Amino acid sequence: MRECCPVIGLTIDQRLLAGSARRLAERFEVPLLDRPPVTGFYLCLTGDGLELRQAAPSAAGPIRVDYATGAMGHRLRFGGGRGQALARAAGIKPGFNPTICDATAGLGRDAFVLASLGCRVTLCERSPVIAALLADGLERAALRSDIGGWVSQRLRLVHAEAASELARLAATDRPDVVYLDPMYPPGKDHVLAKKEMRALQQILGADQDSGKLLEVALGCARRRVVVKRPKRAGWLDDRKPASAIESRKTRYDLYVTL
Image (cartoon, rainbow, N blue to C red; front, side, top):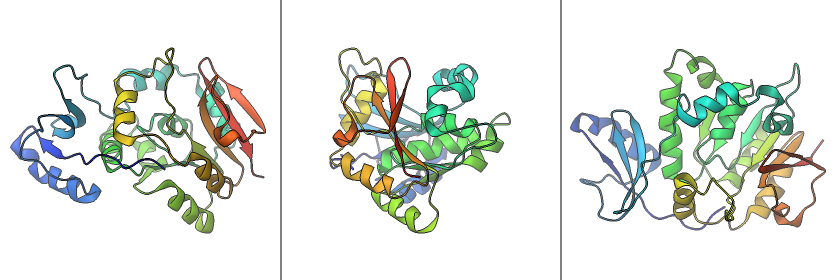
C-alpha cells in the first residue's frame, strides 16, 4: 500500500504503434499523450517495447522490463540456481516447487527468477505504470524460443491492490508462499539506488501500510511469508520472524504459517 501515484501518460515513437498504445492505455487506464511531456516521467511505446522515461536535462536512460538480456539474463545463467538465498527462502526443495504470490511485484525480477526455478508465480502490482511495464516485458519474454514456454506457463500478472488480491486468494486458491518486498529507502551503501530504484521511489512513493499487508499475507499463505529486507534493516512492522536467510546485501525474513 503506497501513497498516491502521479498520473503518467503514454506516448509512442512511431505512428504504426498507435493501435497497440491504445489497447495498452485502455487495459491499464493510462492517459494517451500526443507528445512527450516537458517535465516528469512518462511511458513511451517503441518498436523494442515499452519504456519509462523522464523528461529532464540530466535524466537517466529509459527503464524497461527485459528478462532475457542484460542483468536479468546474467542472473538467470549465473544466479546460483536452486541453491541461492532467494530459492531457499521460498522453500524450493527437490521435488517441490511452491506456488507463490509476489504481492509487491515491482519490476518482477525476483518473481522471474523463482519462475525460472520451476515455481508458478502470480505477480501483483497496483501501479498502472509498473503493471504496464511488466505486461510488456512478460509478453516479449513469452515470444522467445529459449524461455517463452515456461514464462507463459508460470508467470501471471494481476493488476490489483495487494491486500485485496491476497484476500481473494485466501478465499479461493491460497498460494504456498506470499513474497513481500516493500519499498525501503536506500542507505548510502545501497547500490540499487540507481535509476530504477530512484524512479520507483518517485513514482510509487513510500509504502504506507506494509505492516497491515504482512498481516493479510499471513492469513493467505499456506506455508510461509517471505519478507525481503536490506541486510541491516529492522523487521517489518517490528514483527520478529521465525528465521532468516541472508545473502551478501539482503535478508529474507521467514514467517511460518503452517
